[in-house]
Image (cartoon, rainbow, N blue to C red; front, side, top):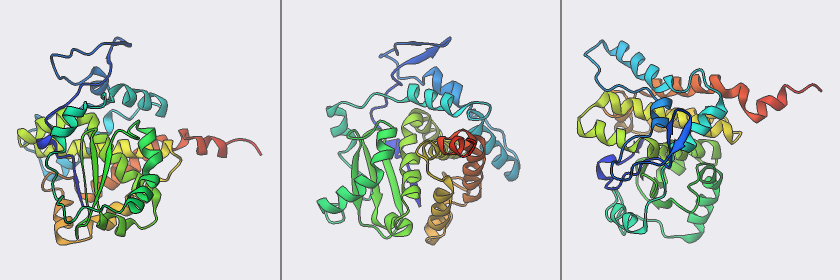
Length: 282
């Protein structure tokens, strides 16, 4: 599976709507495209990692990806994510960002309006929760590999092979979409990591997006285990998918992704509306 933010191609990166300074929201500085303090509070990602043993490196990547989530309530995480969410891009910027999309041709793009409408309906709750309904364009394209990628805040592209693999599992689809939408929060960091060839940093960001996906799923009352199962099927889909998910390049080993999903689920499951209802006296 290719979960690619396509950060190298992102020409317009926006700061979050409001910076957080001593607990108060302030206006972002328009001249400088910097990370918001809210993002710094939520994530502790240092990309100056010295050479370490592979197992230690994996533990570091997991620890850093999860560090912003531990010790916080689900409500606090949701508030931080809301503050991190950038403004939608302008129409002129959308034209630039969608001028050339990977894997997409006139021949493999699905134009069936009914099929597209059904797919959009399946992911509508996720898009609305992330405030990207009617903002992010959905593209479906035919391809033998399971591919998902995005241009931050502009377009979400999904291959037909992804839908074949997950079938009618809407929770799995929601997790995949939430992961991709989470790339918008860290587009600047991803761009920096890619430009510097920092594979460990890129993997940490991918794990962060998995953690955000878990938060979104729990908020929607969906089980992150469905997302985990889908990732396992995707990672074993082909030789290319296996290599992509072996932890040697831009994506974490599938075992690490599953661990993060499990860890974040365990942290917040007791705080979900469904869990609270189960605790009410009968």
